[in-house]
Length: 174
Image (cartoon, rainbow, N blue to C red):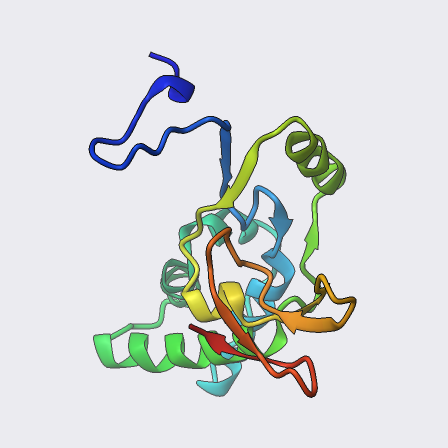
């Protein structure tokens, strides 16, 4: 059956729009430079030499923990669970503070997303990022009254957020 014909039991809700779901890192956005900078920041804090991007970008899609493990292996350094936690915490803090930094959409991605939206698709992101690093950047958005407010980039239909009516600054998800 078509997705448009499926009804959820007891809700009366039917799916009438197609959905396009994308991964974020390495699919829509080239985050490799920021991820590598954060890995190298974490390594430098622990006195370990940086890794070069040559050949290392292949590990970006595996996530930060796997990237750290590969970096340690590349330098023949042992990695205990305690070291993993410490380095990963440093990595996440650096990445969250610097994103979007050097990260950019791949060429043609924004136009393709616009075409999908214009064709009636609901667009969604599925990512292995920690929620904070995927949503910590604020973007300007205009309200129905014309006020410009700063909101997280990942807000779905039906999401409720709190924004200061005085400053337009994002406060929290409700």
